Length: 142
Image (cartoon, helix red, strand yellow):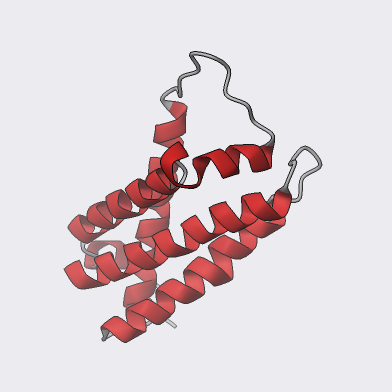
């Protein structure tokens, strides 16, 4: 495999940006109280204090992380020469479940997590599905 730094000039940056937004918005909505947010907070043992507000870090860090992941997805799509939506879907599944979900399950078993498997199921599923959506988006716009 010839990995060259100029592969970054070969990817569609518009596709990366749109994939980033799709991924970040999807995961953000997944963790909102109207979806799985209440169970997610329960799993962590977090109780919202009265008048609690999320600060910018709760939006900026995930956005940056989704961007980095989307760049990685775009590069992997190029390196694997994915040439069909089925190829992109397989790459999304492998990346989402094989990497993101597996990492979330691993890091969820910290001693302060109240319900680690519930946390991992909620967050791991969000990451896996978000990555699949981002991969399909990036492929479709490339």
